[in-house]
Figure (tube, each protein chain N blue to C red):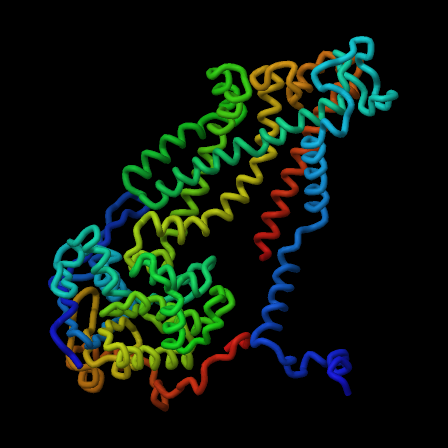
Length: 304
Length: 278
């Protein structure tokens, strides 16, 4: 009987391991098992696919539409979705809504990612210092950040953006300020937990510097929960940025951004309700997709 | 084999302070004037029940905790009082093997990375691969395990990696804090054999912290018995274990479960095979 026939025979798992590098077969099997465990579920993949589509439409918007997102034809204003040449209709100034949604996705996606990314870096710095130095420095640092917990996120964002003045950079800055304290709290708690582990104490005994221990031993174990939490904040960031633009504290007209588009068309809600809510639908779907993807990634990370 | 004292503790006191829910202060004296001395190449077992202060003493000896009063001299230098580069240089001379093999290896580091980290701290910039391979041979693990992560290792294998990590810093003194208590009986014997062999091969000074009095004579020449932070008896391990003079030591020996055959009998016949769980 040939080797291949043996391999296909019932009960072949009891056969000796075929010749090859030692440990190769178990390694491959373990890798396959690990891939199965870490595979993300269908809703996550669908949501991720949707986000990729939004991203691609934002990046390649100039190639996908013949219209200028800033210039409209007043004779074509408030055309219904499905009108010839305007798949999603036109806005109050006759600009193509689909075009503005695609161009607006650039800022909206950036608003979902950039403030959270910057806040994560700041939070890592604050949380690692506070978590690894629980004395006066750590206490003062965390108590200062705790002050920001006294305000609801949206109120804090509006307050800071209003104090800094309207504008994209100030709105981003406000969001960074909103997200840094809760992220720093997660980093600090994770750092305290990891710093108490015996492998960190063993690292101290090797004579390594505090910075080296933080970077090599603590940080890799702190990152996963922080990244999971940061991912869950991206949907919130998108919504807050849309909210700031809606009330006039975000982008300046006529820059396309979903929150601003929703705000500028709110007066049309009774005359052209479908046109008016289209930016809201884009915000809703993208925020949901971001949340589903972050939940799915967290579950996949837990399984693996 | 033995030489001048490399590790000496004198009058070590340590008290832990805490508050209960009603805000009342509580003080627990973990160590009350402990003296000990271990000669270069010697071995000392510290035995006692849970809460006797063994682990606190171990942490103070390796520098993880500072004593409230008293001194610890390592190679003639006041170890807790040292700072900066002197402290780091001294620190490498004394290493610890921790109790829990499941918490003492970084789950996100391969065995190679863990060993390289410990070696790099000793010789910044040095290529540590050769040292890693040597350590794997010393602790009787195959070189292929260097690329494994802790979750794919058994408890005994993890503890061997812990020993390798402690030894790669080339210490003079190793403190084994209940290093086998989290392992099953046969693996305990393997690890104790390994420790005894390594001590001989590398002329290590060993401080062996344990509550298991049966293993004391097999591993160490001297013993120190701790009870509620006080040294109640000390002497040659074989003598103290066979004929204890202190009531507490007698009770400790009498309370220990007995076995029908000597513990240190299981020796590995060959190194574990790559890919096959031991």
